[in-house]
Length: 129
Image (tube, rainbow, N blue to C red; front, side, top):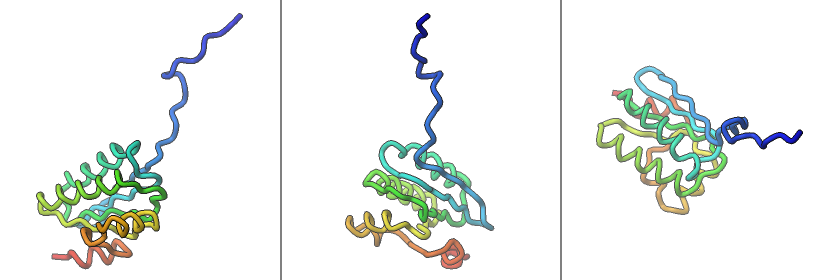
């Protein structure tokens, strides 16, 4: 007896290549991104960051310490979120960007477009009312 190959819906889904975690720290919201940030994971990152912005925090801190792959699509995501945050009056800070993120920011000249801090505490202190 020959069995039919499994349907795509029957196959286990692969783990996402980008994981997100959002936590409130005082009046700030920290969105932690870990894994790979590129065109295939853009929507996952975009959804997490825009949801965090919808909370109207005093500061949106994006922790990029665990980002392993960061492409122009990741940069475009951060630039778009920065612009949306600015329009809403929410300061945006990048926290502890990984080597991959720092490399893209420096090579593209975008490093000066972001407020960058080594820790969430320093970012929050910088933006305290």
